[in-house]
Image 1 (cartoon, one colour):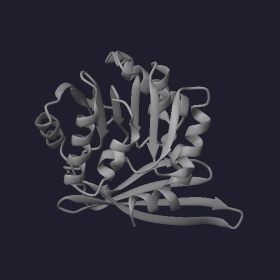
Image 2 (cartoon, rainbow, N blue to C red; image 1 turned 90 degrees about the vertical axis):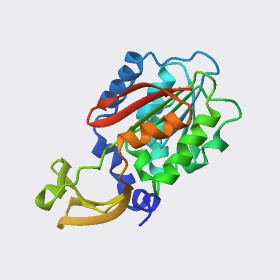
Image 3 (cartoon, rainbow, N blue to C red; image 1 turned 90 degrees about the horizontal axis):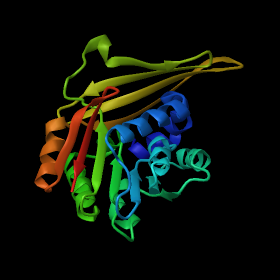
Image 4 (cartoon, rainbow, N blue to C red; image 1 turned 135 degrees about the horizontal axis):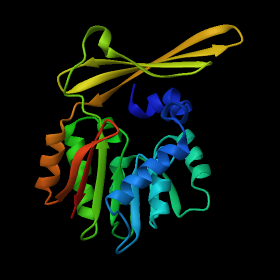
Length: 240
């Protein structure tokens, strides 16, 4: 199953529940932007790749940017429209790999957060996306990336990760490692009037090491301002 099919048929319906309180997560990311002095200085244009239901897009807009929020899942884009009401957020239903289509002026900020980067098919697609971002960024513009590191394999029972549960839903993720990718199986148990039901869907993510991302952006001539771990995610901020 493709990533889009997985989100359209499985994950999109529960994504906002899975990620937790929107206001808290949004404030956390806005604080991250503040700590790294991410504010408009030139074109004010920002692009949010894999915007989901708007944690990053809303935060960026509140920092003063005009945001183009890109995602290919209609459920999440509908939620984004609600969450970003009244803010300078343009919603774009498209694939992030088409990033060069989304601007008629140079963006001074591009973000690709959550685990969106690993949703691409392989390291070459990641390289192409980052190269495209570097090309369209305004001078002194910044690119913010976050992603999960899958270089350390989990084995046996450790492959099963409890993600979230409440009185009506239980969500578990199982990881199966291959040399250059990891098969992600999302298992949802949900309560109905007739008892508990199970829904299962799998897709692949790219296994990409943080150093590989650093090497790619460095080859593109971008300067690394930050490289660390934030909320269990690798976070990289680079500047053109």
